Length: 124
Image (cartoon, rainbow, N blue to C red; front, side, top):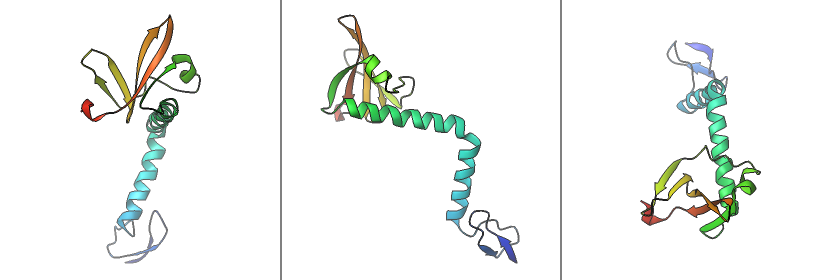
């Protein structure tokens, strides 16, 4: 069989009659793009929010542990509803993490703040 084209790159296919792709790379690329198109609103929204959160946590936590006013980071687009995992310390504090950067809300002097930390080996 010859004459059919790869659904991804339009290369001429040879071999089985029901063949749709010229290679596994083209098959994976085609399916990845279609998945993004079909599920773009949910997956892309979550991925974008997680990346934005990580970027902001990195920006405000240069030394491994810091504190930032909640409104400051929220106003830049941080969304605390999106996180990848959590860690609860021995003292009961619950840190939510975006990849390796974590945050915990606390009130100090009647101001809402986030304590920012970076994942450490002892947290495993």
